[in-house]
Image 1 (cartoon, rainbow, N blue to C red):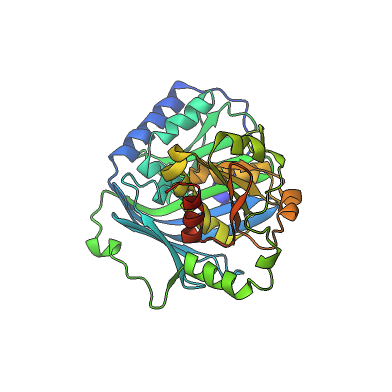
Image 2: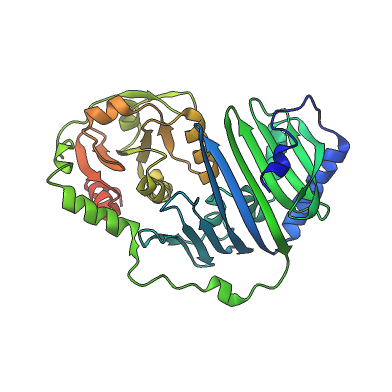
Length: 376
């Protein structure tokens, strides 16, 4: 099934948008907009930095914000199975391998659900995203025909996006059966089969009980941090000390210094993370929400990536809809700050004094440190 779209080719053809392509794109926007439920099996292939990963699973989603998505890890991995669940009130991400979960309020329009790496899920909850892709380039053009899961489809390319090739696979009903994004040597590709829309989904599908003994990610990280505090956390800069200044380049290309952020804000949280770090992936959405809640009170967050390329970080940030600042190439700064495990967080007052230092995500500890500076 993966080879079907590959046969069309991945390089951007010397093609310009045409009326048929634009018409098909609009048909897809309308069909996705009318779809109130969707069930499907999926295959998701990603290749980043030369590493290829294939995941499979099942999707059950319903507007405005219901979901039960089961993702199976590649056969050669012992972890990576994930359950994504929203009952319309609470959004959960559960990892069976370590029996942990992250929980937050369900976004009223399915925004939490759309954070996963399956493009088609994002477009189901936000069909106008296709128009946004179109306006990033010069239009849309039909570049081929394929069959996905027994369904005849047209391959539609969004033309004119610099250094990127983005294609979607559209059935005669206007619904997405796949997508393909290629940038440099990287690719992200999805296929949907057994797709059904506007079919009744039993209410029980969105009623799911957490397995017995499951712990929150925060509980596990805090417990681990407590166990290793004497061995590793002692290396962190002490509360009350002055945080070293630094200047880094953000993924946007602009430079940023700690001193400039401290000058403009009451408190800055400096976060160290990497793309391979599972706890970092669990923590970042919580940091993003914390920033959204408190930024009007003079609170800023600077996340510092360790070791990943700008392309990897940019893709992850875009797909996750994060609004946090993110800087690259932070290895030297992490050494200055005594970082030996990630995620690591420092809360720094605007006079440069360290108000809190945490290995792992400790939201209560971070909030207590913020309160020292009058931010609640």
